[in-house]
Length: 396
Image (cartoon, rainbow, N blue to C red; front, side, top):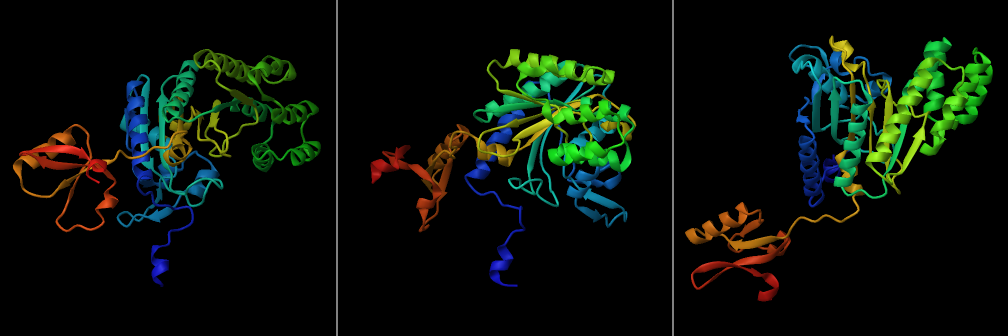
């Protein structure tokens, strides 16, 4: 192995260096503090769990993203966490069995076997919030509002909110009789927006003309909130669950419009998610110039069932690396104060006071070279027996 090969990192696995690391950490603290003010309690999911709990009920896509390892203690298979949602569901069902509404937030590193899209990392820093124990639309409104507030706190500009409701698709699937490979293929075609293939597949599908029409209609039901009132008529005669989902989507959309006047909103009934655990509202946030969602979430009421406690649940998550890369302003670590390294008690006391007030003070060792790399714009100098902060430009 050559020296160059020793420092190469795997594709999609990156290190985070200054000042970007400080930028991400500052953003993490800012968002978690915001979640706390909304009543969300911080949890720290483990980095690995047994596969039986980590992947139960989440579908094939998350399984493919999860690294599997053998536990040398028990001999059982474990998985490295690729998504925190299932872990928080386990914690709510088993570790924190609260009877009422519970709110959790988290921020942790996760690991993916492959990139989920061209712009993503295989080692995201996932941050998010989850709300358990309430099935009404007020919980969905709160979670969407918290996501939009998070993006505003992160100073992302021109955010577009994408809203959908997977209940429309689920109600059609359940009443259509489609199952097995046919249902999986339809899901794939809709999720990947393969419209010519979808049209051809529907022509040959063993479905009634009504269901062919309704499934073909899903990708066409996309646009501004002003179109919402037209969609129930287009699904006339469809199962009751379709109209219920459309009514829920309409009420949530109107509430978000009222809370965030001027917020661009795009609606999409063909918005289907990869991990297969969503049961209701699904939503994403997009910014110009970035081809993937910067944050996304939705309702997933049945996730905790496999842990013996099915609870209504909704939440969202994002990758701190992506959020930090998309902020509108350039963030820089505050420049520091250079100080000599000696045992003068008054110097040590002055440095302690400065650090207590939040200043960055770096002591320079005797004969230390490359002091200019310390990113300091001031220095501590002794004048008439006292230590004073002076601009380095004044001494040049």
